[in-house]
Image (cartoon, rainbow, N blue to C red; front, side):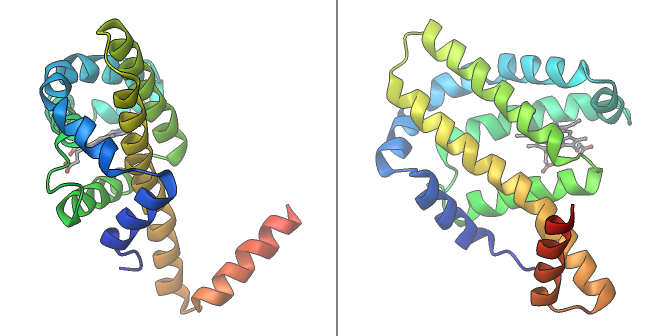
Length: 184
Ligand code: HEM
């Protein structure tokens, strides 16, 4: 595997500025996070279900949407608990979520608006519940880290597949992408 999820977690935390203060704010609101998680899941899947293509994926097999609601609640709650204080278990779990989306064939263009809905809805609920601004900041930052994992998974899986199939070096592949982009 080209990407080391543990290193990626540290890198993203540094880049996004996910601080110890952000972590303690999230952990202290963990109960609230769990409380709103089922309603957040409803808003999330209603949003995805309004898109014909995504709706077809969500209902592709029996019980999928039901299972997804449960995994969404877990996922949302984990952003507040941090699992192992946003360590290796957290990183491995986020990487796995990314890989599952690649496997199921959900394009990156669907994931960004989906995370935007999570942010919008959470912000609205934070405001209505009179929650502090630093919880909003902490939640936005961890959402962006989780989004980075899902998006990066596409790039990593695509690059790995091409390198494996062609035997090209990573350097050659990067040059082809750069020159390809310049030619577009
Ligand atoms: C903010 C973006 C998203 C988050 C946080 C998210 C979260 C998750 C989680 C936690 C899982 C379960 C992974 C596991 O089984 O370990 C999952 C699986 C899945 N997600 Fe997403 N998701 C997102 C975007 C999307 C979008 C845009 C779609 C489009 C329809 C989608 C459809 C699916 C499907 C089909 C599965 C696999 C379900 C199965 O196991 O049958 N997700 N997602």
